[in-house]
Image (tube, rainbow, N blue to C red; front, side, top):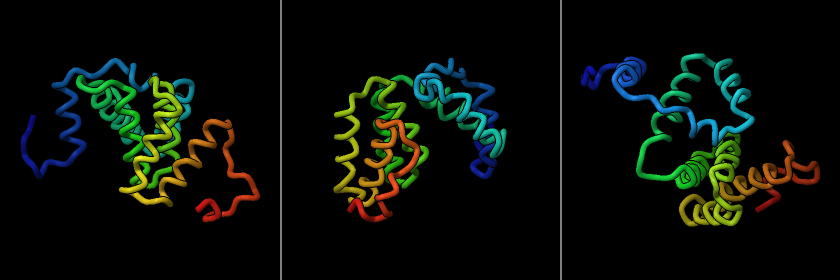
Amino acid sequence: MNDDPNQDFPAQFAATQATATQGTGWARATIFGEQEGRILDRLAALDPDLMAYIRDFAYDTVYERPGLDLRTRELLACTLLVGLGSPPELRTHLRGALRAGATETEVRETLLMCVPYLGFPRVVAAFEQLRLLLTGSSKTPPTEQAGDAE
């Protein structure tokens, strides 16, 4: 592997993948569940290389590392995505946390833990994603306006 810090990321990724043992995809399959094909297709439509980096590196390498169980990794991912303000990705990982064995209470407590660090607006938005996931809805009810939940 070339250790040149000026080497671009795609080349670093390819070199790392050539020497590393790639995961089996079990973490990705657990997190995405029946949504896996749709998610990968959406990413591939954006860019096939981007989809491959996310699939092979993020899920099949990072998520399959030893040291943390998948439930913990997904709860951490939820926390990070609340901080980034990324609702679609957060919803995927809220679903993933539940699929990986987190209870609804654990997910709610994880989101509540974000309040002192990230603020109420981000956490309210995160709870909205959880509500949509748990109710199977894809839209905010028409009676709710942006900002009314605070």
